[in-house]
Image (cartoon, rainbow, N blue to C red):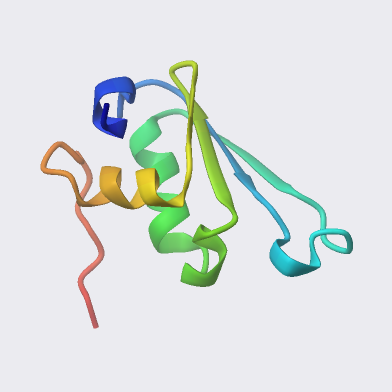
Length: 86
């Protein structure tokens, strides 16, 4: 099953960003978003691309890893305008 089958862009979502290779030294960042679409935007556009690997979104009783998040962002159903490539 794809991430789209278990994810609603309209429901609230939680984002967790780990510290990566230095995770024992860096705290996990937690953010709550009113919509899944905003959570996906944050994960892909607003934090550095290097952090996406260490990001998980929890929503709709599911966990979505970096590959799922990228898939959601690139899906035709993503409701927000995407950042223009530079």
